[in-house]
Length: 274
Image 1 (cartoon, rainbow, N blue to C red):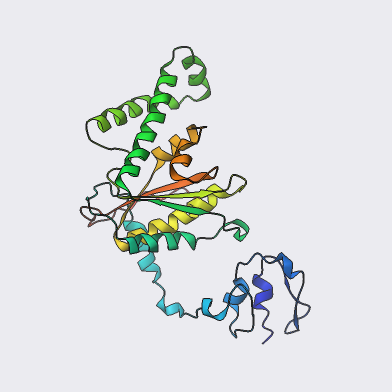
Image 2 (cartoon, one colour):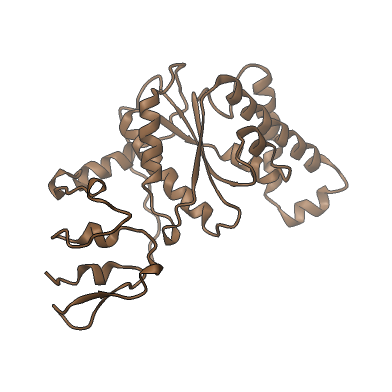
């Protein structure tokens, strides 16, 4: 057809068309980043790519997609429901959540993210207790009168977390886990240390996972406490627990079956726009 769509969408500028409706040729195909844009955009199936054989290419109808109103409703009702039951998330649902995460875009289509799923109750307990141990060390450091004047100037907001750390520890001792909230699964998303966009890629993947979980009726809670502990632990003890070597943990999502679902959603104040 020589429509030129592949020329316009290729991020590596491999396809060349000197004039409208002219012959399409290739330039430095070794620069291909395997994004698949050329195959996905071609209306005639004229692009043959070794990384995307016919069985991996699927036609679809735009009318089969959710309407904008349905997407808006899904976004509006999504909440971090912390009232979790003791029922585990079905394995096939977890597989769909991870597959949704893996469909997220990554910088330069590097696709270097890894996914580690923890569902064993003993390992979940170890993650919660690891987090509390790191927080206990931070609590002691921040309470040291020798470093307080220095830290209070460098990080003036950090001292508001001291009572939070203490409360988390005391609640856990009394049988109330305010870290994992009774989640039956933890999804760790990690990237190689050398990946400059690992955090950005992981949070895009995390959003995909969160939306799929919401669609399935699974509660998802972003594990900010655990991620904070990971970033403060230079010994990478959680990496050893998970068996992921030196990879950088970039995002963590807790998953569980909620005891009940929210029947309402609330309009938030719109963000300021310039």
